[in-house]
Length: 164
Image (cartoon, rainbow, N blue to C red; front, side, top):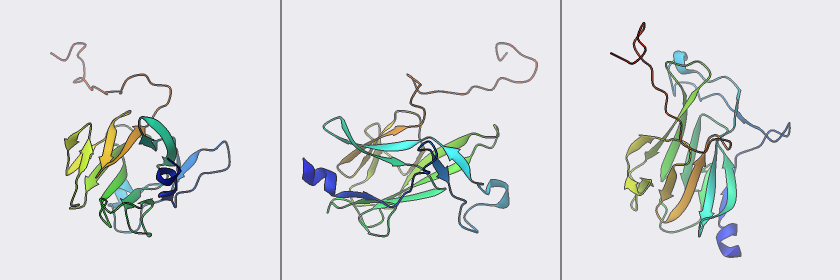
């Protein structure tokens, strides 16, 4: 089992103040100025699972997180089944609710695929406690450790109570 632990590295950093991750601004040109990310506190993390046991946590602490076999990836998975640039996680400000961040995962044309809750995906928004599989490596997204269920926001039309 120690071999499994050693093959995962992360270049992400944790803010020493209370162990919270900070989101670094997006590189210029990645998003329009409307979506330029300022440094904010982000509590979301990817948890590496081996036999349903959390082996390591990777804080989602920047606007774009690359996952792959390349040593230049933010989350490096040293496994031949993982493509050099396998997937990307994007943290994007929610267009409706200020202060909320939407988390997306995108497969970058990998050979063995990217899966969310066992379904193959090209690009998908992630929810709290989603299971992500990169080739044959399992992760769980934890966006809110206190929540017991994934949260869904429903916005009703103005002036209605039941949406009619």
